[in-house]
Length: 237
Image (spheres, rainbow, N blue to C red):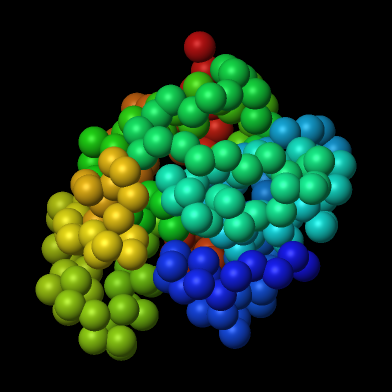
């Protein structure tokens, strides 16, 4: 495993001591769900980690799947620059906070985004869903994590304010709850002024995301009992 500077891990909200372990757990959870839908890893030539940070999941991916070329992108220059440059199977770039990405249509057999849609407002989330739909191959799969009821329960135990202010009933009625947050100097990146903390219900995902991309399944608490995993595919023409 490549050594990532501790300041980069902290910068994206990670913990230095558990960085490697957490990344492996997240990857295992994602691929458990891919196995559950009989995803064929042999057909995965190009994959994308959208919102890769400093490689918590990407670095494990390239070790476990050396036959797949992994593209990785993030809005944070410092995180992207901390990723290894000498591995042909890892192609990191800095992307803008809004689409499009510099990739061809129908290019990726697999994309995954961990803790990205948990920070997008309603306008941005739809823009990025449209972008996922554009870059996926016809048989490709996208995995996106969201914060929902399981995450709320965990955050209530930690007495986080957004969780204490939001009941399960409110989330169920609204479907989408967003808390804008002021970006600190350390975590303020170009174009991310509209970021915050987003909560989604499964019914909201099925009703509204399906207008932008095909919703295959929502797995409650799919990331080790925390964030949900949403399994997506390209809309049929």
